Image (cartoon, rainbow, N blue to C red; front, side, top):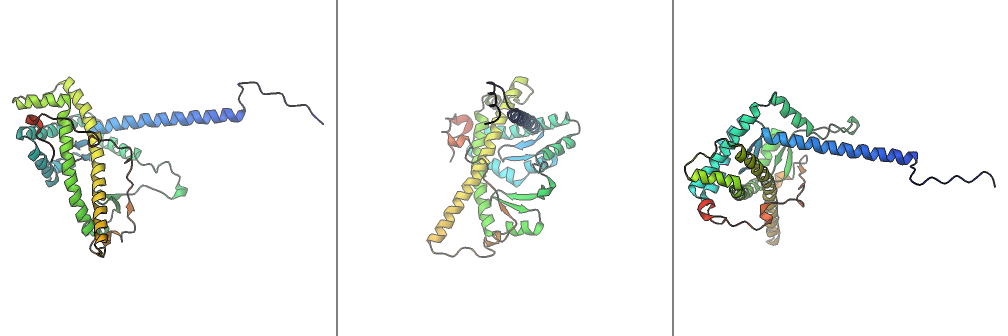
Length: 308
């Protein structure tokens, strides 16, 4: 037997390895906090400078694109659908509301120095490949996302044109258009059910101008728009899910009748796009929307009857 037994470690004293592990964990926690704070700041900035048409779930950083959208057939068809379900004055109020919201965004954008630089920085911050080393041979690329078919398509004219001519795409886009119109009515009623926006509607119905600057009302309206933005995003996911569900039902019916699956030129062309990738249904298990809850009772003279 040789040597002496090692002295017992004092209670509460950390080894060098344990101290290093603690420091690493603290640095990682600090980094996550900084990233969350940076994301919150970026999201608030996006809300201030991004044009939004809530009923159509349309968003853009560029004024000319927003102007084109408001004059588009897509936008007008959504408002026509919503207008058919609501009293005329209420539908007119919604149009004024969207137009006023666009004007307010224009005013906020004028106070931002180097707006184009800010927009480019937002896009840069969203590029998650920046922190990946070149040894992984990975970089950000442009792609077209077909929400109707849940596909990412390479930004190549031939492939995109081939996709939009398929029977499958045209069936899906018609289904999604129907879903989009129905969800726009839910968003419209969500806007009208906002307490402070409801006050604006009451004033509008009395023949007053409800969009005159009022700091208290504007603050409440921004809070309502934030909730409305979240609702719009969730409804968009549900619309895509609805298209996928209908598509699956149709495929099952075709198999049950013993009919052959579509060949090339009748939907099969989508399968040939080997470079397309199936988009993940991100966050679908966590999504929450007004559709998950019983709709609130509405005053028929302002918001119209039940959705149908």
